[in-house]
Image (tube, rainbow over all chains, first blue to last red; front, top):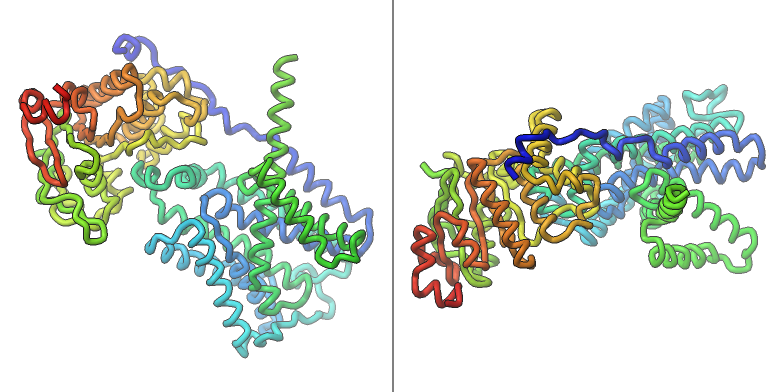
Length: 342
Length: 236
C-alpha cells in the first residue's frame, strides 16, 4: 500500500457530472417551442398556458426547497400570496410599477421564509411536521389578509387598468406580451433551480437530504444551508405570485393563501419530478392539460380532473417515484445503453 | 496536555441517565478504544463529545478548547470528526462527491483537490470507484469511504463508532488496517467497538464501560489479559 502511494500520483479526470445535460438541451427546446406557440392557437388557450407557465415557475421555486433539500414545505401559498399582494398593493395604492412590487414581495417572502426555517431548525421541526408547520404559516397569513382593512379584507385588492399602459406596468394590449413574460419567468426559475442544484449549496443540500446528522458531522452547516434555500425558494415563488396577481388583475385571500394553492404548487413539482430541472415544467403542463381536457370532454362530472389527477399521481408514485421527468431519465438510460451496444 | 480530554461527562435522555461520570483522554498518534456491551453508553459518550446530544454535563476539551457551546458542524471544523455507526455514506452521491462533502470546509478548492488525491493514495480502491454511486459499494468499501470522507476535513482526531459492525471477518481485518493507517498519519483515534478482540489488538489504550460508567482502563495489552475482560468480552 505504501508503494502505491509513492509511485504514482492519482490520475486526474474531468469531473463527469458537469457536462451540459440532455435535460438542459431539452429544456431550451421546450421553452423555445413554448415561446413560439402563441403564433397558433386561440386567445382562450393562450390564457390557460400563461397561467400554466407562471405555475411552472412557481413550482420550480418550490422545488429548490422541496426537491433539493429534502424538506417538504407545504405552505408555499404564503410566499405566492405575499408576492401577489405586494405587487397589487404597490401598483393600486402607490401607483408604482408592479415590477417594484414584485421585488418588495420577494424581499418580504424571503425574510418570512428565513424566520420560519430558523425556528424550524431551532425546534427540530422536520418531515411531515415541517409540512404542517409551513401550512400553518400560510393559513395564518390567509386569516390575517382576510381581516386587514389595508388589504381589503376578504374582498382583496383590485389591480386597475391603466391608460396607455406598457410593459413597465405589466399590462399588454397584445395578450402574447404577458405570455412571453410567463415564458421568461419559467425559464428564469428553471435556471435558478439548476444553478442551485450544481452549486456548492446544491451538494450540501444533497448531503442533508441523504443523511442530515452525517452531513452535520462532516461540517455541513445544516441550519444555514436550509435557511438560505428556503429564502431563495420563497423569493422565486413570490415572483410568480406577483405575476399572477397582475395577470388576473386581482388578488384575494383565497387566491393567494388557500391551502389548495400550496398543494397545487407542490403537486405540479412532484408530478413532474422535484429533483429534475424539467420536472416542474412537465408537471405543470401535465396538470393543466388534464384539467382542460377533462373539463372539455367530461363536463358531466365536474370534479373529473381531480379524479384523473389523483389516479395519475398514485400510478406515478408506484411506478415512477421520480415523476414524469424520471420516466424521461429512465428512457434516456435505456437509449444510451442501446447505443453503447451498437 | 491530551488532544481530547473528557471529564465527569454525564448524558441523560429525558431524565434517564445513560452516561455517569465518564472521564477519558486521547493523545495524538494514539488509538484508544472504548469497549462495552450493547447499551453500556459508548455511543452516547461519542455523540456527546461531537455535540449531537445537547443534554450533557461535564467538560469536553479538544485541543485546549472547551466544546460545551460549539455546534456539531463547527466541531468538525475544529478538527474533531466522527464516523457514525452503520457506514453512513451518502448513497445517492458518487464516491468523489462523498469525499467533496467531507472537504466542504477546506480553505480552497485546490486544498480540497489535494486532500482528495491524498485519500485516493491512501485508499486506491476508492479511486477505482470514484464515479460509482456510494450506495453500490460493498460494506467494506463503504466503511473505507466513510473514514476517507472524515479525513477530508483534515482532522486531528477521528472518532469511529462500531466500524466493524456487520462486516465479514476479512473486511473487519481491512477496516482495522484502515484505522492503523489513520494513526500512522499522526492522528488520534477514538474507537468504539463491540468486537473487543480486534479492537484491543490495534489499540494503545482501552476503557471498558458498563452501565454508563468506566469500570476499567489502562494499556490495551493489560486490559487484554484482565481475567474479567477475558471472560466477559473475549470469550476466553
